[in-house]
Amino acid sequence: MTIRQIRVVPDPVLRTPCDTIDTITPGVERLVQDLLDTVDDPGRAGVSANQIGVNLRAFSYNVDGKIGYLLNPKVLELKGEQYGDEGCLSLPGLWFKTRRAEYAKVEGIDLKGNKVVLEGHGIMARMLQHETDHLDGHVYIDRLEKEERRQAMHYLRTHAA
Image 1 (cartoon, rainbow, N blue to C red):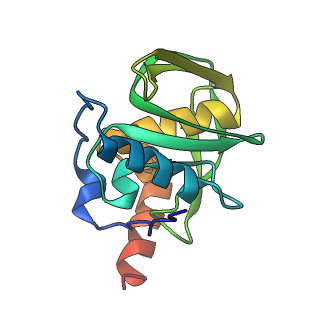
Image 2 (image 1 turned 45 degrees about the horizontal axis):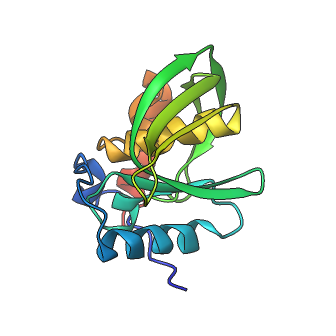
């Protein structure tokens, strides 16, 4: 069991779009196991590969007692709107209301190359959008309204390690 350290802003790996996984290798299998081990901790809804320093399109999730992973996720559909508190392991101490779609549908593959579709409302939809944003090189504060983003950036400047 390997629980990996979470990278925090301003680590550049968090702002770099991740590469597609073209071949399932033993390294990709170890990555998935590390993602599953790392997300299996109270308060963690999702962990993307770049949050543990790996520039590949993969994430794990832990929502409503279900733990899993997805490789090469692509958002297929977003519907509705929710506006609620969101935080991020890569931005410790920050919680801001963030607009997201109420429903999200994402497609990817598993370790056998089989197509997998994940979808959901509420927290599941928020997690799917949050983790795919990470893999595209974005963090949730990029989506904040102007005043909240200003507050978040001020916090980051004044609390930098």
